[in-house]
Image (cartoon, rainbow, N blue to C red; front, side, top):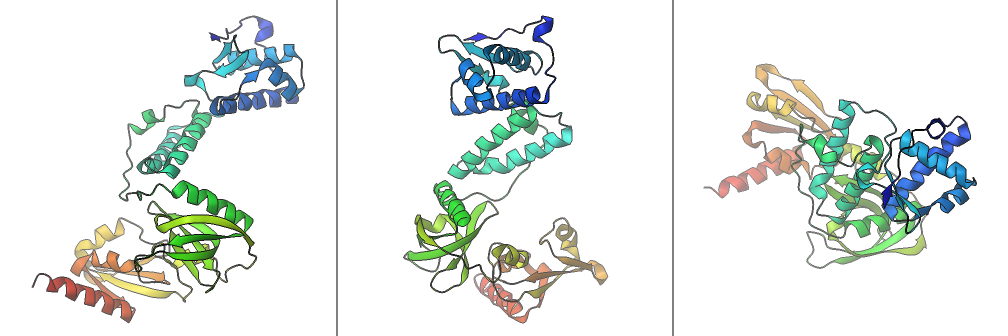
Length: 343
């Protein structure tokens, strides 16, 4: 392949003055970029037919793209096709500032822990393409050298996320019932489920989806790694849950939701851990109050106390549960069992 030479004559470097010409240029750039990604072959004839212009107009536009927009195109004389060079695949639409690159670097590093999973690989491929569109480069590694974002949670080792995601995405959009086998931690054998899916959620790097059981009519979360043999059926559903899972998640400490009315979880922390407590926002709707002696009171309005119990136990004797009473008793029972192991 030979590189299309930049023509320096006046007539080849003139601007595109009409609105239709400008729109055609950017549509042409988009077509060339997408063709490079998909492997589609773009010829002069292809562009003539796509934009309903003559050959001279296409050639002038190609020169404009090379000269003025500084995109590196190659001409494959054997196949008669235009190809964007590997290191100059994208046209940046705007000038980005350092804070913009920082945001893009954050997104990229958010995805890196999941590159071993199918869905993570899809995300990273999409990110690479979007990064190129915004910056004009595919070299996103260079922007992660100054700041490193570390994420503590490890993704699940399941390789089924992409298939499950694609089936659920379509089923939710088309409001179709899905069937699958589900192995919960409490049961040795998987159980067959028939579910009306409503929402997918990623929490701490793990995908869940929420749906209504067609038999019990209970709204329940399901973890992707525990799902097998999933398929969308032809059965449509129209009923909506009384409370959408997105609304119920406002009162969840993690991924577990409940239709029960939320109640206040009130915790009192000793002074020596208050600064560490204040370093993070533990819940979007938390209330943190300073108390005498440097202590602090944290109030969380939750509809389920299941997931907060391990978090409370992690603070050891530096926290005390003031309410509700059943949570205080559950924590006390766990503490006694832990102490008995070292007696």
